[in-house]
Image (cartoon, rainbow, N blue to C red; front, side, top):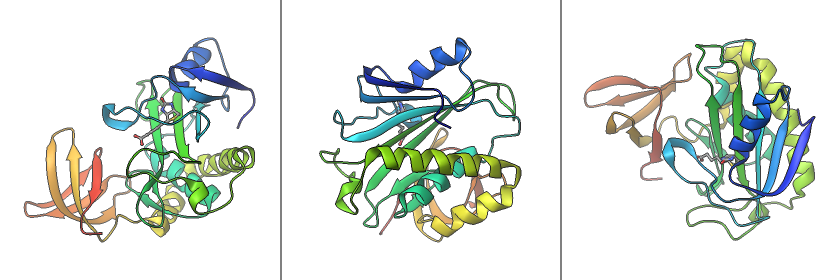
Length: 228
Ligand code: BTN
């Protein structure tokens, strides 16, 4: 991964830039990296804001041949492995040891069932201050060289992408790095807000939550950890 690549001073969003390149035939593994995004986006319709040069902000093109249900978790595992510290909040935020957010992952797929034609995977990793409120910069915890860090992340992404054919490996690794399971959580889902205890991961990567209403599988949502 990382060949070919485009390195931009600024763009609206590396997601859009890479999607256009994909339509022109960019191969799997292509990467768009930008110092500054004027319309960076996050999960669930949120903006992604980072100061110019302070974050590692890039998108990677995948053309999967196997089902990708576990891809969001696999990418979280890759990021945690490459960075070497922190924990994963479901589905794939990387949190610093003190619970502040270090990185976010956005998986955008063109519809096509379990094996979409194209996946544009976006990663935003806070490397240096300044960072938004409630976020952390990796440099607070370790010395960082952005080029080495990017190379390490791309290598781990390649490893975990190969693991998509071994789902149990991905689930096992994710659970090892989880800071979500066993915790009381509040979850904003597309269907509303709920609270409960995060019990486990389902085999499709959904979060199994025990609440007053019984046990539910949450396929998509935004988790806040309660009483950390
Ligand atoms: C999240 O935490 O909600 C996901 C954030 C993903 C941000 C990255 S930065 C590179 C890529 N381009 C974007 O516009 N978003 C992703």
